[in-house]
Amino acid sequence: MSFTVVLAVAIVFAVYVVSIYNGLVSKKNRFHNAFSQIDIQLERRYDLIQNLVETAKAYMAHERETLEAVVASRNRAHAACNVARNQLDNSAAISQLANAEGSLTQSLGRFMAVAEAYPDLKAAETMKSLMEELTNTENTVAFARQAYNDSVMEYNTACETFPANLISAPFGFRQGAFLKIDCEEKKAAPKVQFR
Image 1 (cartoon, rainbow, N blue to C red):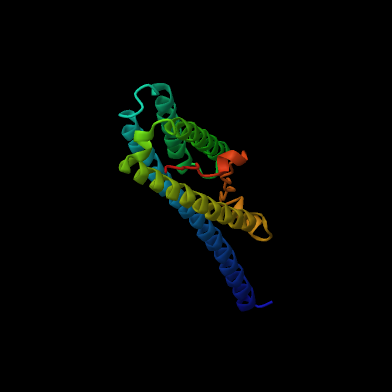
Image 2: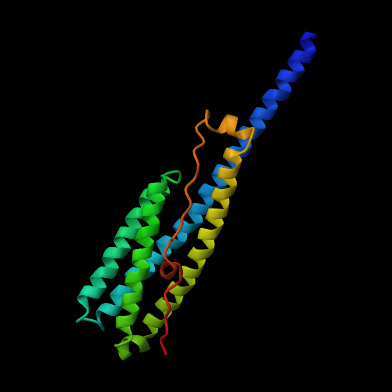
């Protein structure tokens, strides 16, 4: 073989390896961006919950325990989100976020059940508005979670398939973690019925 042929084969191989590497980087960035979309909506959710609790305090003075449970769940979920944001390839961090979000959803459900007993609270325009925004945000989070999981699946598949798997491990491409909420009741947005 001539030197030119060997050089041409080496160049083609190098271009092929670089294209696989760049494809993995692109897919990794895509799933990180998908988590950023979840993160934006979760931050909005945390702010809405805080405003909701503040609004309800005036009406629900005797329900301090319920309000404190919602605030505590919100704070745990917010902390878990901050950890997960920087560890998207850590399944334990993502699982902790999913569990904290599930607990927050359950706390909100209990809050809504208690709020039903306060007609003045149900009639308050601020409360109605916050609840509507929260429900819309919950739906947006669900869609963003699906997009994130789709992006993780695409990235993980790219890392596992041949010949990319020969490049992904040596260059430190670790699999992304799915954001799953195991319990069916946790998957649903809180049902709000102010009339």
